[in-house]
Length: 218
Image (cartoon, rainbow, N blue to C red; front, side, top):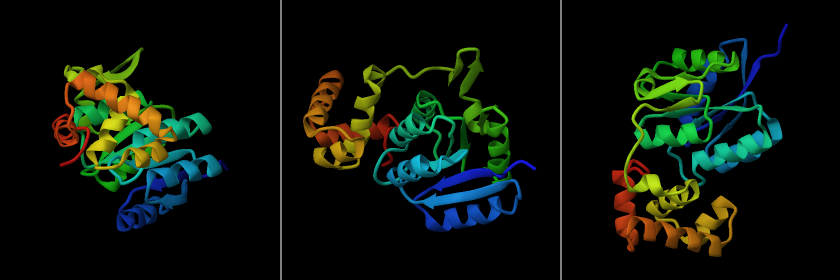
């Protein structure tokens, strides 16, 4: 008999994690090996446990989920990440594709859809909720937005977008450097670069821009 699929839950709402854990473990083929509330905790536990699946919320305090996913893939390439979110902005979808997520499930779907997504992803097939699927195309080149975004933010590098999202949350450059495992000088360079690219030189305006572009929640 094959072993159960090992799963790590990552969401800052403890009650939601508890309810989802109970539902998943009702399936004898699924086993929750860790349940954490922040993305940086997820990185630590994923490196240690190397779960088959990580179910990760998109909008959490601390490290960005996309940065965490990239780090998890570096250290545990066999682990497959499925994003769970109440939001499905084009920018979130685009960033999920950029870090090679195996799935994107909206929280409006029933728990059965999460279970179906896990089994489908473990069979080697990506899973996207209908609202997400309607916005992407999947072909030989992989999954991508059907109509790629065309705005000033599309000129930013992945690192600059991450810095922008952290700045929009009100984090200091020192806090951003710690979360991204970079030096403060590097964060300063990224900040200067993104301000020049966007022609925005005020943190409040940067935050407003990030919210309008779907990179941060109001």
